[in-house]
Image 1 (cartoon, one colour):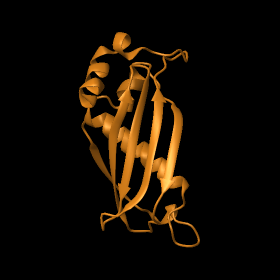
Image 2 (cartoon, one colour):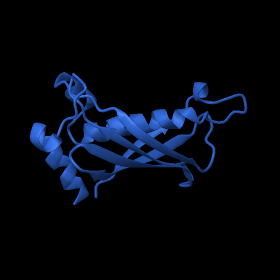
Image 3 (cartoon, helix red, strand yellow):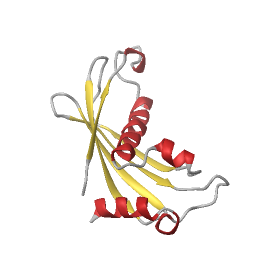
Length: 137
């Protein structure tokens, strides 16, 4: 199974009055890493949007393990967990520079056309379907 790595630099504005990263930013980083993953397999969000495909979040799960602070580099590993042609599930593992786990999470996404109707990616976008299925085998 293919994993994709993405690194996020923690910005000052992402921290709270206690000097630690606000919890809401980890969800943003999941999104950044997901977009980077899609780019890496040749299916950027821009490409999807140009073709009239949207991919909303269906569910999120977040587990916070350690804090991060301004100036930290957080390595995010994204891995496809399942894909049935309608829904895509991804896992995220975030580590600090000491290689300690700071966050674990997952997200599930579906694929819709411009009118909000579900797409069957095997039929409607077979190239994308095969790309993802190949990563899961």
